[in-house]
Amino acid sequence: MRKPPETIKNFLPNDVFPRFALESMKFPYFSPCDYTSQESEADGSIWTFGQDLRTVGIKKHEVMFQAVLFNRAIASCLSSDFYAKQSYCIGMLADLLNVKKWWMLRVNCTVGQDKNYVGRFHCDFDLDIPYIHENATTAILYLNTNNGGTQFYDEDGPIVKSEANTLIKFPTSTRHAGVWATDAKLRYVLNMTYETK
Image (cartoon, rainbow, N blue to C red; front, side, top):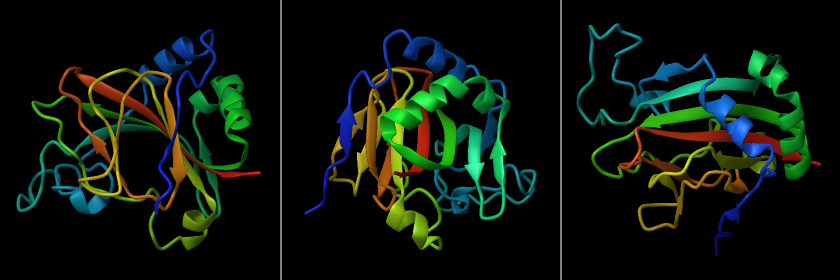
């Protein structure tokens, strides 16, 4: 039996969350991605400059904008200005989640659609890095409220709705998919992958 994701409402203190969420959503370094979970979903809008578009099996709604705040690679770390500027809040997140080592912090933004599309089910981080899948946790902090969310395991799995300042956490090896919102132009989440102490 699979362990359900843990859901924690009002995760950050009420005097901290609004400013942190607002600054996360307004971060001026979002990069468009023509995929949401794996580069194989890309249609060529970016990498082939639209000159060699793949249309078979491509869902046009499966795009997102991403701001990478921190990324630990095998031999290096990337951290953004936001990571430094928000060190107090990121430290608070680390304390609340019992973080020993961050692997990735990023803000993902999807654009409202005419129906609640469910994206591709995936595990965070490539499957060719078994260490992370065996030792890491993924947490999603919803930055705004809308009727989108996160679905788990498969198309019959549970859906956690996007509710501002609600956090869900689960083993990084857990399959999940984003659910697009229909009642908001933008859906924002802070996606975190980390090891615990």
